[in-house]
Length: 184
Image 1 (tube, rainbow, N blue to C red):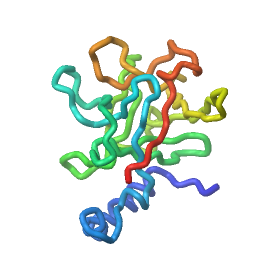
Image 2 (tube, rainbow, N blue to C red; image 1 turned 90 degrees about the vertical axis):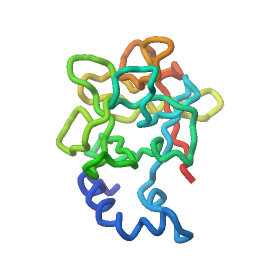
Image 3 (cartoon, helix red, strand yellow; image 1 turned 135 degrees about the vertical axis):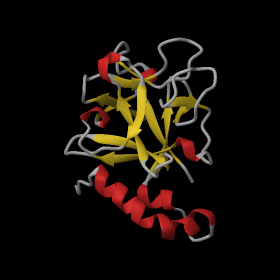
Image 4 (cartoon, rainbow, N blue to C red; image 1 turned 180 degrees about the vertical axis):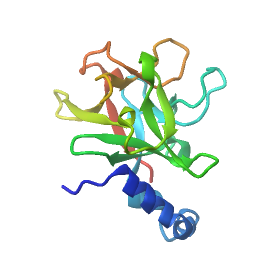
């Protein structure tokens, strides 16, 4: 298995940006298909992770939940390999400085999935992948943070849309289970 670092993927995305613009808007294909962008669907909420701000929730710069929409590029995430057993989640959209953001485990146990500039050396952006297989033979992925072993999950409080990183549900709980849905 070839290990591709997040830094190498970011460099490739930046190198292709100029030539891929025609592909995104034209008939030649799209850049996201080449780099495997996906929607991150949470089985417990029935919604997808997004970079879209929610005016009803005050902390900006975090991953949120929204109804899944394959045409909304704010919901496109690249699952990039960062080490032999770890991955990171990079956004499709870039910030005002042209930088991709990655889901990051906040310091101090905040429990929020912050969006920070992707940095291959930032262990708070690294997640391990675990699998859950249901009795019908289908399965989902669980993303466990390298920082403190908590899992990417649902909001702590009802009425909020934050994607959180917490450890109070068993792996069998759909609120910790994620599927990757195609963007095209």
